[in-house]
Image (cartoon, helix red, strand yellow):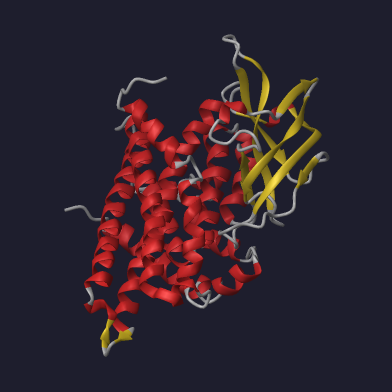
Length: 396
């Protein structure tokens, strides 16, 4: 029988208590006001959540993870996402898109400069991949970076970048064309641009369907100059680097979606057991109980897929599994749980009836928040394309 170990269960209880005490009482107000609670970020840092996959040398706790660091991160994202999806994605993006690229590809100097504050929750970092005309087609990046002497000169724009415009955002890593490779394809590299750099403009926050609490901005670069040593990783390796970043992010999104599914299940069980109609709880009706039973199946399936993928990621870091195994498990988990989360919020809205349409209940917020799970970190269509390739199906 699959189950998480005692250490992971204790860690889950710790994060669950924090989310219930420090997040749950405020999320309705934060969501209504589209307020990003910057004061919460250091608390997440104090709890050690930003440092789960980071070595002690930079303030993390990787050495104490007993080989299950990424699984712990997924547990934290799931538990925060159970209370509010925006808070879950703040952690997910803070680690997966902010910290991990620097940790994985950064020089010792880059790691020493940026990681301690990011791990402690004193700062956040963003990752600028998506552009107005380059989303799923990430290779269509139009942002350009030209090396002039000892400086990169960056021009272009990015769209939908999480954690990029907060008052504590310290740096954003962006992908840019830095030339043409030997095969004639665009050379894509990753360059770190400190927030506040001349020529780097953070656009006003988006008005979004969901994730109202999450910080999301467009970014613009106009003759933005940074030192040549701000190149992250190898020149021309940006495409390969962000593909690996997306594999990790897909498992994290799966954990976030799982939190949503579990919350919808619990809300529906409680509501249908107490809501009376015709003198009895509405749960006695099969039209109500059957879809709730489907939610239980979604929750169990999502748990198995998410934590299998997280386990494979931890095993890969230990040298015992392959990249393709992680990539396939990540796409399977992300595809299933994101679509199941959308279905779960639809079921919950139906179970709650008119109350499910009201903002006084959490169902409406989760309904709004769920849709992006099918889009971010690779759409459902992209996941099916990835799986088709991994299955060896003929490609166009």
